[in-house]
Amino acid sequence: MTDTPVIAIEKLTRRFGDTVAVDGLSLQVAQGEILGYLGHNGAGKTTTVRLLNGVLAPNDGHVSVLGLNPLRDGVALRRRTGVLTETPSLDERLTARENLTLYAEMYGVPRAQIQDRIRDLLETFGLAERATERVGGYSRGMRQRLAIARALIHEPELLFLDEPTSGLDPVATRQMHDLIRAFVGQRERTVFLCTHNLTEAQRLCDRVCVLEQGRLVALGSPRELAENLAAPLRLDVEVAQGQLGLARATLEQLPQIETIEPAETEASLTVTVTAREGIPALNAALVQAGVPVYRLLPHEPTLEDVYFRLHQDEAPEGRPQAREVGV
Ligand SMILES: Nc1ncnc2c1ncn2[C@@H]1O[C@H](COP(=O)(O)OP(=O)(O)OP(=O)(O)O)[C@@H](O)[C@H]1O
Ligand SMILES: [Mg+2]
Image 1 (cartoon, rainbow, N blue to C red):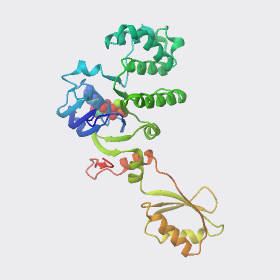
Image 2: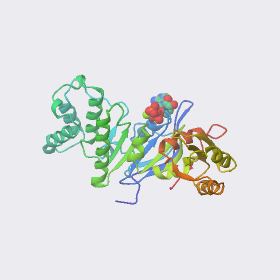
Image 3: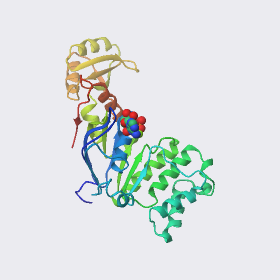
Image 4: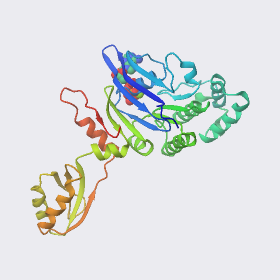
């Protein structure tokens, strides 16, 4: 493990005509990290991946990947990185095995190792039994799995995955998550993961970066983001039977309470408090009013809450505000 970031992005900008796809983005990714890259359709995720792989040139700013300049050192870089693009192109006329062999040769995998590696990957991705069929007859999920196997054929140090579980069934999705973890765990390798799946990001990623209109609007671990940005906090308050009216009247007086609604269960209310710190005051007020409190259950904030929250409060002039946490 080194302290030098595997990916260093500095004030990166890329425009397409009047569209600013990536807008002054700065971000560093450390070795051994799984970085989740989130944002609405058109936020600039794929453009970032293309810039980091030297497929596109920036209009401004600078990127360094594994210490290399992707535009200048593309060949050297591609031998050390694996990329699953958004719409992977496979050779439809060839079999899975032939597709993998072609790539292995192209990426300079030692000849003696090629067939062993292919066998392992086909096995891992559940394609061994269909390995000699033409890819033209594969289902969408099978193609996706083959494309990921292809990205791994030369044992890259850094893997770019642009929506890897799109089109995969729940079982294959879980297998993919296990594979990503195993990939990173073995030798401190690094993953840059574009995803729309917030549960996936929450489960897998060490840090997530939320992009909006090409700008970074939040960066931190899923937990940090959830704790810091998911306010107001929702919680269920269960009180003694017949005390709901008094409980509601008491809570309505508290400045920390934003909303009060009946909860699904009887004798319960679901309230939103401005921050976690409002919970003790809520409890104290109910006790003081003589309302027996049976249960206070906060809804644990998720990355999904954060995501919707972030997209709710855009700056008045329509530009997102950066909300950096834990960096
Ligand atoms: N080659 C291109 N020519 C013109 N505009 C482009 C090009 N590539 C990207 N854009 C524009 O740049 C913006 C960012 O696109 P990008 O594909 O990076 O978004 P994304 O975050 O990957 O979205 P999605 O979640 O839909 O994959 C969009 O407005 C898109 O239309
Ligand atoms: Mg994309």
